[in-house]
Image 1 (tube, helix red, strand yellow):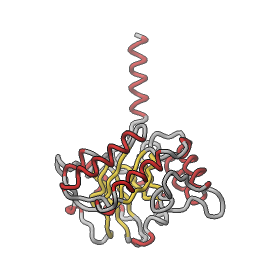
Image 2 (image 1 turned 90 degrees about the vertical axis):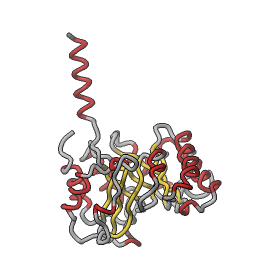
Image 3 (image 1 turned 45 degrees about the vertical axis):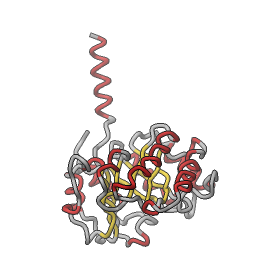
Length: 264
């Protein structure tokens, strides 16, 4: 009887901590300090703790990547990443930004960036990599397999996102946790732009929209959540400033992505 009761309690605990399918993918290129340490990231930390079953994928980008080979980030990045990681939540991941030049950047440089993040101190080390400017053609899958394998061997419980910003060959979905299948202006997007099938499943796709309306497009948020996408981000800022500013409707956006998925 006691054993059965413990199993029930364990199951209820697992349900209580289950994460919702659609998360927020935020290229967090905002410098972490303005007036005081970590003040610009405070709304992110608040959202993570407020919506404890909503996944947050936060991409940090100290110097168009990690900086020089085997370097450490500056003291504000060290402190503020550590604060995010110390929130004690299982719904957030910090990922390091690595550019790949749509497959044209030298592989040695890409791997060096991966390894630089991996040797950061444990208190502020990312748990995976966001590969920006990813290729989308089938011929480049093998190259990106090398990159994602490097991530898997370098980070415990690693997580990998590829960002071609467009429809990608199905092979990329076998080597990455998420693939950004659309990144462009809000006005240019329609849900029909997305190719959703067994080779490119919705839970592995993410959408990044910039230059959005001044008020949150709640209907589109619900439509994207209903598609069961893995991640999304919408901001009213234009492309040049899209990821270096918090969306004007950040609080409402988080609430709606969370609320549109009901309870877990």
